[in-house]
Image 1: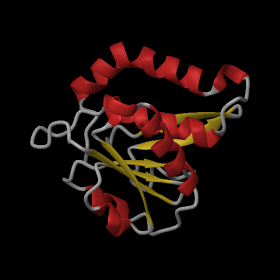
Image 2: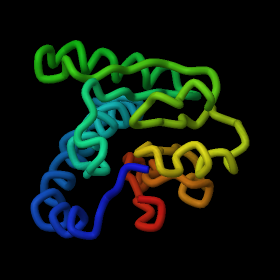
Image 3: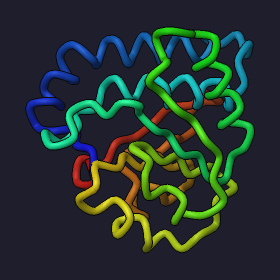
Amino acid sequence: MAELTESGLRSLSRSGFMALACLAAAVSGAGTGSYSDTDVKAAFLLRFASYVSWPEEQSTPSPLRIAVLGSPETAAKLRALVDDRGGANQSLGVRSISSLEEARDAHMLYLGSEHRADSRALPLLADGRGLLVITDSARGLAAGGAINFITVDQRVRFEVSLEAA
């Protein structure tokens, strides 16, 4: 599984925390309601990739492959963000999948709220592969996700499992 290593977490907590906080405020529309939850989640997914410390044997994968299961809208928004940013994201691929088995070659897996597969398969799928699993469910972290989207005060936020990361 991709790691948010202890040193990476320290680094994230020092330099990245402010960037993530700014991203959270900016992407959530600062209360204006101008962005949908899907827009916000797609933007977060794109940014998460830059904060991950990939296992040494993988270094930073190129192209970085993001698989999306259970949220075609988020996949479409994420593709649009990648396309809009052009050259900066040429080494990034996004695809919708219909089963966990299709995520075997992905580096990041987003399980949208429409995903209803057996969550016990997540740790097995991610184990030792460098797969970052991002979920969108009330029990996403308990199911094996490293990052889980939550809604707080009508804003999209996320929680991180240090154990899974």
